[in-house]
Length: 172
Image (cartoon, rainbow, N blue to C red; front, side):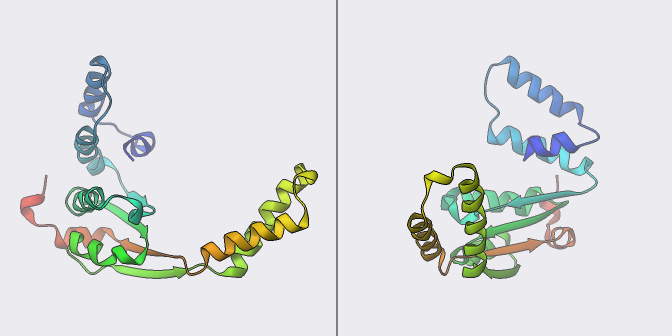
């Protein structure tokens, strides 16, 4: 995230440059604490920032909680888009201390089949002898049956949300 924000920023605060140079001189890796501090420094200088965090449910619960807590307290001027499976919705609401706008999106079998046929067709144009019709159908059926019932739950948070709930004691 930090790298993406830095590459689009028109201004990079001197403290970030100094921090990165110091880390490089010491021959160590950038750590989460370093990234968090640099993001806190950089984000107020960005006109608009967007965070898109996909597959939040795939994080370990402790890591997910830490990330959600940071989103609530440290990313005040960012617009945030989260995706994950529905079982984490209560946890997200609890960690962010708000009922989020959420939308359930379910995979459509026809869309999945069409996409797979298109992708397999591109490969078959390059390597026509690698697959016959029977193998193609087995692949389609296997993937479509695995995707059956899968869906994404996404949460959308806006800039005005953060400004309205963020306690003064958390301001940096």
